[in-house]
Length: 158
Image 1 (tube, rainbow, N blue to C red):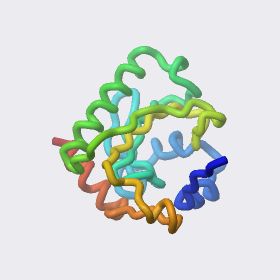
Image 2 (image 1 turned 135 degrees about the horizontal axis):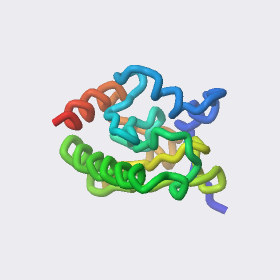
Image 3 (image 1 turned 30 degrees about the horizontal axis):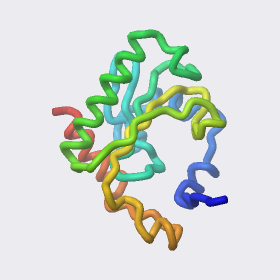
Image 4 (image 1 turned 45 degrees about the horizontal axis):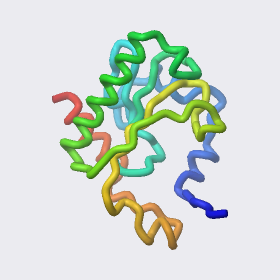
């Protein structure tokens, strides 16, 4: 059996909150502290606090609903529009080679935050997996999360 180690995710696993992080962040003002990039009518875009790559963000439904089929059509449509816009913004700022876009619905599917549907938008580069992650159990993030927030927020507003 092969194992994929992601030691940088330990902080995420160990810092669970009692409530839903997506519900709580909606009560806060937008900014580098909560990493909300944009709020739509039914959804919002937020940077992943424990990203797999620079620019990794999520599009989150405002309502605390478990799964895609629980959302009304207008929310699903806005989620797709925001996910598409996220790709445009990230492509313009970081020029990735590709993207992973998707949702992990339920704990067995790998959802780190269950019970509140969200879509991940993850930029990818041809060489974003290298010896550091493979041998040294270290993820190299070329930019501070606060800088990523500033760059993507400014581009999103254009």
